[in-house]
Length: 79
Image (cartoon, rainbow, N blue to C red; front, side, top):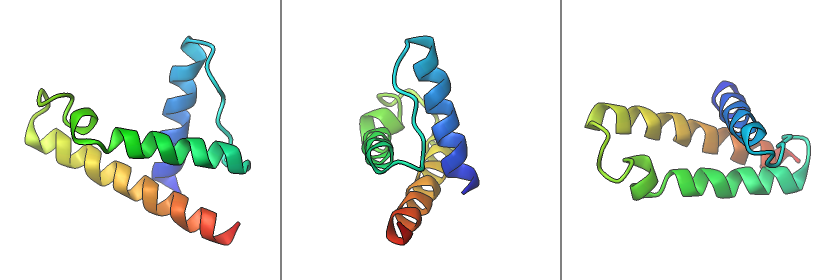
């Protein structure tokens, strides 16, 4: 759950700057929003920052996001 918690923390910190939503993994609606956000972040354009990131960084981001997705999926199966 380390990657998923870190991802949610990053999202909440960013959203706090712009008075956006606060995500809490205990709530189904928030888990769905996080799943959508992860899907968006894994799109090729976002993952590579439109081709600006070096391959090593892209792969590190992908591994991190993939782990967060796996952790969220396992959490949603239990709930």
